[in-house]
Image (cartoon, rainbow, N blue to C red; front, side, top):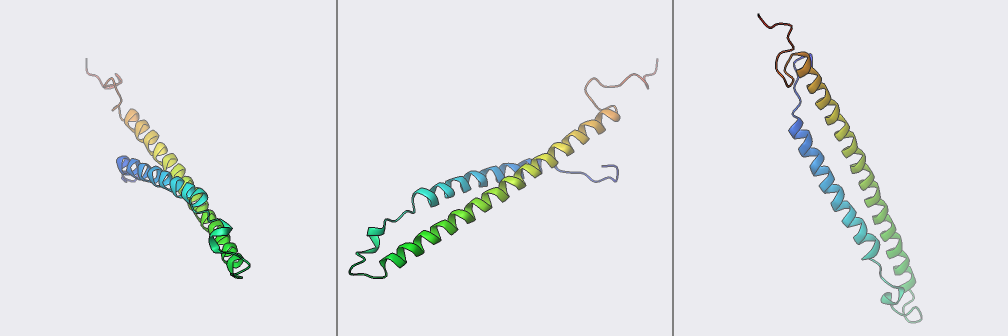
Length: 117
């Protein structure tokens, strides 16, 4: 701010919107991985005739759990980054508002100190 750097607040807004959209997509992926990837044991075959059916079912169950954990981790990371970005944007917005008011650029025009009479 005092060193002449400027922050594009609209770009930060755009990042925040994209992160919330991504978070929504991750919610949908989480729902899908949790509820739409379940395969019943019977789908792998009869364990009397196909001895590896139980192994396949267990491998599926483990992979499903890994996928759910990965999506949950990504969701948390995106949520944290989105909240942090939003806080940063709010701080820059507050600072910009304070700078405008210090320079007499706030609503209402002049503060009366420099008015010539």
